[in-house]
View 1 (cartoon, rainbow, N blue to C red):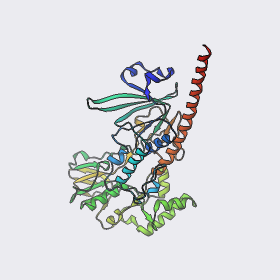
View 2: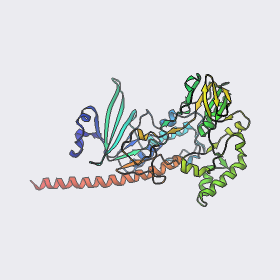
View 3: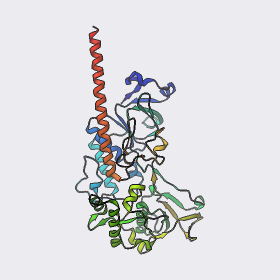
Length: 434
């Protein structure tokens, strides 16, 4: 990449004069990748492998900031490692089948080092807009300066032909509004800030949400001698993590190769009933739509049980209905019951932040995910790409990353070849004048 005033073609230098004086402009001879999580790293590795230059912009101070800064300590991969590895770099053989959070972070660090990927950290994208006149993307950022002699911010603008959105589906926490929460008086946090049940011993903790995070936070609290009550507002699929010694995901993939989706769903629900029993009698009502169909259509992931169900059966984790309002030191539920509680953990999920910075674009829907479903949601118009929005976890992100890297590399090589021909032709014309 180069300062635009030094190395840009003449046609690209026609920008707002005010921008040129207040914002540093940089030309990137390749794509700009927004996000240095697993998706961004996977695209970068694919581009490195094909000799395509790029830059990765990351608002945090590290790779995989969601995993490093916003996950609880007991977290493990929910699927076996072979379904979670990034392209061209397997997990170490000595890693367990379900690597821990810390092992996965170590794997990502090794991945970045192996492919020599160096993101631009502490740089937040403010806006990205496609200039149809010149066929280029203008990506404006705020860069945090933390040098030995100065601390502050500077504005930067990147100009590029291709833009890869790799910020994922979980870039911002969802915090619902509850009546009276401000007057509750106890400790309230989102699950992204929860690390461990240490310090909660003896406390009555309300966990809002019954997805994988809600279940695991409740289990962790229980294991640290807290008294969790888990709010189950809607229906939820709970499946065993393994069936007959194989991961449930692996069984589902095997069945889908031979059977239609609806039939696989029925088989999984029958097996779940045989292994887990009737979970509805504990307040965990199953949706009318099967777990795989619900995942594909609504992006709602089934809960893979790793021990929480046993605590629910023994009433060590209490299942309660939705919240009506909070009171000082209490919560009133929709059934009129009032619980004394000390703390609240909001396991209420995350959402994409793409609509807040990607301007004038119809490739992404209002919820920040591509309008076209998997497997056709990775490529838009004008050199726009998306990775990590498949609702199919790390394996889906890897597939998209391979497609994106290959497609950009093909275009980049064609354009580079054409530019060289143009330069050579100009050179020959110059020589002919002498």
